[in-house]
Length: 219
Image (tube, rainbow, N blue to C red; front, top):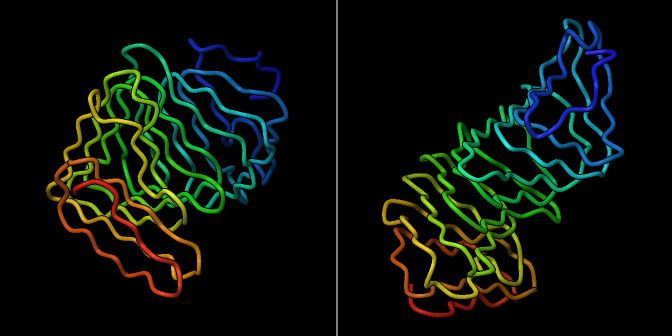
């Protein structure tokens, strides 16, 4: 709301009709740290979130349905023992989504495009049975214990290069036997899927073109 102070990791932040009753733009030109971050549309029009500075969240993220996102700063979730409920409401992301610490649970489908990707470094990342579209998923480095739960949804990997990366698997647990993982890029660049000995559900390679798909490690 207008006149509010800069939040800390213990404060909630909300941009909605209390901020403005008509369409407006929020520009993040410095790193924003807060607990729960909620976007809600004004009474007339939609909210636009712009800028390229990072977001550091210690709680939940809720996007507003139909909102405009040109914001490209990295989004990092952290906090020892924190819970992160992530609600996209149909809004796609075009930046790095970092699950650095805490137990993260998707509340709906997640879509990451462009140069963004999903990185999981510690604790729990639960797709909760929802579909996830992203250029790649990075499970490195292998420093802290972490559990990745795909559930029954589809993971669509749209990028090139290393689509699923593991530096090692000694501290990683994957629950993916009911999931579908699909590789879709049809360009000339190569794609690598690092299985690392984990058990997956269905691996669907729908990509074509000149770019080879390499399966590295057993899957």
